[in-house]
Length: 69
Image 1 (cartoon, one colour):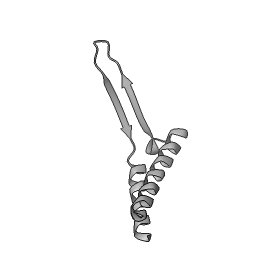
Image 2 (tube, rainbow, N blue to C red):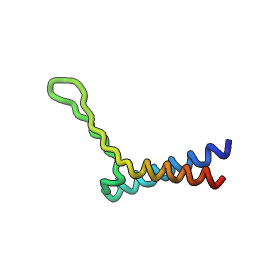
Image 3 (cartoon, rainbow, N blue to C red):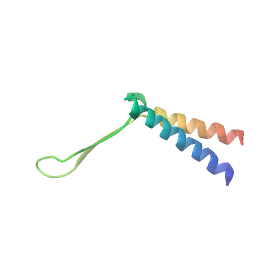
Image 4 (cartoon, rainbow, N blue to C red):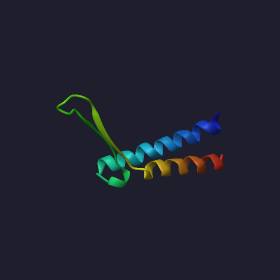
């Protein structure tokens, strides 16, 4: 159980930290953006911009930590 939870927590923590850095310092490589639109004719639109770099680095961190355990 510990062998699964620890790498998962490390991967999620790495992703959250990198997304937070991207949002704080307005870095597009590390940024997560969700924009909601309400058009005049009704309906619902949204745009999502997600940087893949934090996700990739988080997964790599999780894989490396799993190999170390």
